[in-house]
Length: 296
Image 1: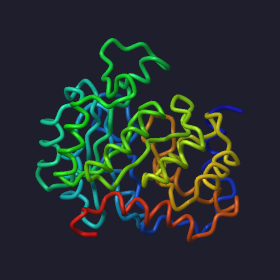
Image 2: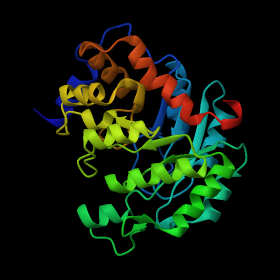
Image 3: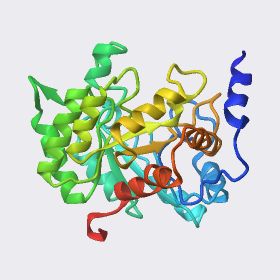
């Protein structure tokens, strides 16, 4: 089966006509402009998402702040919320408080999330691709002082934390330190990804500490090794009340975000998940991450 046939099957097989994205929030949206190839730009995906009735998109870029993109989208496509953030990779100075502060103060105040290092993480350096420019966040089982400084600043700026491509034990350190700093909106970034491989037991521990577990639907594409049955079982093991479903789409050759979400939610319905459970994972939990503490 070619990749095109597989993708077509994934997108259209057994998707009920009533499948809708009304009110859905996607917290992991890749799009152009980017320094790597993307299948769609931010304005166009916002227009499509609006037509589907989606509530909000959080734009992610591994190498630059997306707060400016979120502002331009909000001005160009009224009727859907757009948000941005920053990933603390080498291109923004690594664990850089100044970069975080300027992201948060960008026109519109739409910066909401800080990701710890992703492709420049020390964990990826050791387990995926050697990277002399990796950005460490811990040493000898303790977070570095500069990470603690950024967490304190994030608490002052009312920003949410995402753990990025950190090692599982580092993610737990981050969650604990974030809570101690006053950050209560925390996401463990795609713990099911093979390169992360956070065990279900550790995911439950993260959930008990108050973090959400992000499960991107991109991991269940036909080109990956994670089956829908495995995906569904992980959700049940952790509990839908602790899970956020995102797309993590926008790559060339993959379906666009809305097509992927429609098809995947239909598959989860076929796996027995109720609409209430799906709403928790795609609407309520993501809204909690984006909501300012002052509005809670």
